[in-house]
Length: 271
Image 1 (cartoon, rainbow, N blue to C red):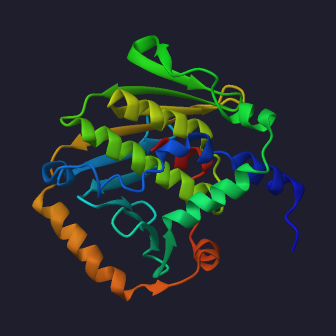
Image 2: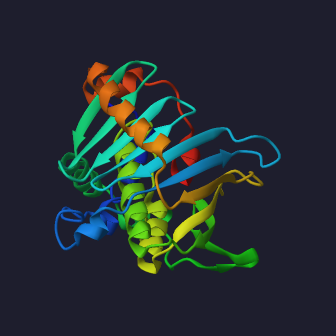
């Protein structure tokens, strides 16, 4: 069945998301050029997402950065995202549906290349900022394009490599969701990720506003960094390693067809 023009337009806009910043694809980021001590840095980031800051969070995630992979638990929707830098794969798991799918990193990157070839310079301009993030009031930075605005606060990590690992994982997360339903266009978010890597900073708070809806409230993410993993964290990783063997492997098409409705486009890019 032919894709309708609206969806086609959105996918075309997504096209250069990963490729506009292709330098973020780091095939040897763990295996080469690092000491053993660097490779063993492990930490956790907990994220609460709010649509209304006067109310409890609508979405929570817990992300563990391990020696050779990163695991994000979406506790609200009982899903996992695993980025494995050793075997160059990305695994998505829906625990409620008892399904999982595995995608090669190279496949995600190739799909970005294919999509980018369909974009025009005008479409790129719509989804990117022409300038780097700049200071905003209240100690925030601002990064804006025609469609949305990020305002965010940063903090220095205990070890600089933590900022690099966070930025890399955030890129793979938005890339994976950009080439699969519901096709979230994260071009601006990848500019933010690149800024964090370059500055060796982690986000403490991210506020994302859709400027197409006048006066809309921002989606707000607050992040708490734990410099070390706890015993409970290690137990949770082991539990996943046991659980993954019980999940049915399915194709990407089937996985995204069966997946429960998750957070909206903006929420998916704010954490």
